[in-house]
Length: 453
Ligand SMILES: Nc1ncnc2c1ncn2[C@@H]1O[C@H](COP(=O)(O)OP(=O)(O)O)[C@@H](O)[C@H]1O
Ligand SMILES: [Mg+2]
Image (cartoon, rainbow, N blue to C red):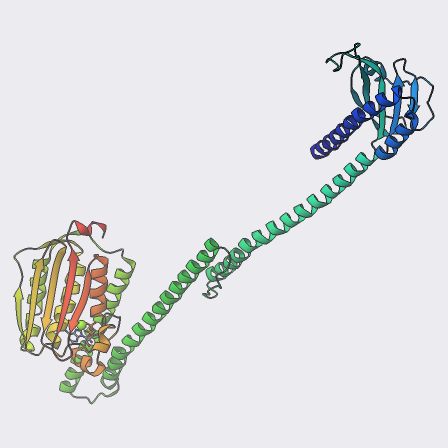
């Protein structure tokens, strides 16, 4: 609507300007012709009318038509509402509509003649008299026709633009929602525990990154699920060995009444040691589960020096039996914050291994610096082969099954030590050269730094 108004004003303005300039040209020509009897005013106006495709009429000061390009009104009085004003020297432009709906633009230009005094070579400004009016009537049908055409084109092109915009909007929306919907579907299936799946990341940067993050999460869930299943199957497998051994010991005791007292006693002792093995395995498993859930850890000041000394003394019988010389370098007191029972367990597992695997000597040193405290346990045993070094802290991992049988371990001791150190914000690592002993290094952050545990 606003656009149509604007276009109409523009087109009409142009036409008005054209008529006005034509009007002044016609008025000038008419002035000449009105005073020169050799010039035919009627023919001149017909020529203008043809050129302008408009009706041109010249009126004298009485309102009588001197010349009409259509010849109809010559000699008659012209009746037009704007004529009286124009006869008083005013230039008039106006649009009128006939009863049949046709619009016409009228331009009325006064015709002046210079009043020249006798002997005055140059006419002075203002010295002029009006001698008539040039009247032009131009049909505006063409203006309105082109206005309609422009409007129709505008409507069609805006419809096309709107359609394109809508299509682009839809396309953009679907490029965002399609990957999100795929993600929602896969996530929904995953929450049903049906299966764990990844998706093909697509879409805009943000949506693409969401897809990548989803895949990472999915991978992690898969890894956790695999670890959980492996832990359960390994644990069951580990329990089967002592159970089978116990069965084998009980069977003859139950089935053979002739079995001698000595033999019976020997079987019962073996049975007791299998029961010990099984209960220590179960204790280790429980310990790992507790560490995994991180609920049972206490935070209290504990003296690591005292803890280490206790471990050494509780293992002194084993060291004596294995003829291993245990030396220590432990300060009188060294406080840290954590779960004393769990820390005792970790240190015990490391020192126990060292004594079991050492050839002759184990050295234990405890020290502290600004970052925290460091416990090193060095033995002169076979060390750990390079290939096994990376897996040494894995659950149930043993370097050599046959070698470990004799030492009677479950393969959980280092895994527990590792988890205890992790839970305390600490670290454990091993330095070893195969055949040249092993050094286990345990570090704990200082009490100030371990506030976050
Ligand atoms: N000080 C050590 N020297 C050589 N090998 C070791 C030492 N400590 C641990 N290992 C190896 O790491 C394996 C895992 O140890 P651990 O987790 O304590 O299980 P376990 O003692 O029950 O066998 C052991 O079976 C052994 O092969
Ligand atoms: Mg061990």
